[in-house]
Length: 377
Ligand SMILES: Cc1cc2nc3c(=O)[nH]c(=O)nc-3n(C[C@H](O)[C@H](O)[C@H](O)COP(=O)(O)OP(=O)(O)OC[C@H]3O[C@@H](n4cnc5c(N)ncnc54)[C@H](O)[C@@H]3O)c2cc1C
Image (cartoon, rainbow, N blue to C red; front, side, top):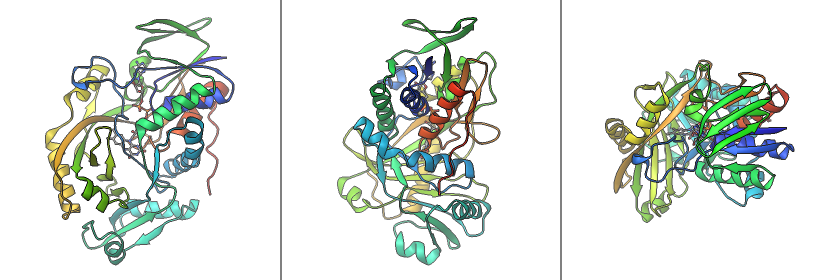
């Protein structure tokens, strides 16, 4: 069977690897990361940087399970591609003692056997004295099978592994997906491709390729980058990613100093105070081109200086990104017709678990059902 995967992002490139390994004739279609984002006229993606937090701890059983299934395959993907993307550094998830999200993380961790330590005020001060928390904060600390990944390098690794397993890569932006009696016709700026089935994994742009839109909500996100010098990066070489969960659920996340392609070290922080919905493909692209909201970035800087008062920051910049949500707050992996399916909606958490979301998408488009993520204990 000839299958096309549209979207060379985290989920699409994972799906292509799984399909190729299963012996399907796969073509993976999507453009490269644009150079010069402000003037780029095409589509963008949500993986254009070097840090995504990865962890098995999560308040939601679905996300914990698909994440642990993916993390268990990181070494296999690194070996199959020769590209390293994972740094095991642990993770800290903190929040007010007794709040609902913290209770849920504890319940999921205990039920599914996710190894962790629980820290109170004194434990946090002893172990992570460089973070400042309000009194009454508790935290879950997962030391193994957690840390951060480079999303760019994971995409590259999945692409190489998919090609080595037999997938073909087409560097193109799809303009239309049309079904007829014989199969599916995919139109792009480089011509037409005919396939039997299509999996659309186009991130925030997924609905732009569907005749009937799915209930996907694309949110504008601003990411702050805080440059530190080599000395400061060395001083925080053991710092794990930190997620702070407010009682209502959302909260800012922080990644430790990571070296970027320009050779410099940046901490990365995100967590928008308000949700701004982006309606159309053009709105999404306009948002990416805008580079993000300076007021949100200023708020992130204030929070970082409060959280790490001792950190010496030598430069501040920001970037735009988008996250895609579903009403059920779980990824959408679904057939929209006999020949077309989607695998999308990371709900702000889809990088670490993209290999499992891609695997489920691959099952869906070949078998018609997604089956279960195996229990990981
Ligand atoms: C600021 C930010 C921080 C995040 N932090 C984390 C984190 O710490 N941990 C975590 O697990 N997750 C995190 N996420 C979420 C994660 O990055 C996303 O869930 C993930 O990128 C979704 O993968 P995707 O494959 O659906 O989309 P993408 O990675 O965006 O890939 C979609 C691909 O589709 C392609 N495409 C679009 N339209 C077309 C078209 N017409 N034709 C062909 N190709 C097309 C694009 O070029 C792109 O390559 C974060 C997201 C953001 C924005």
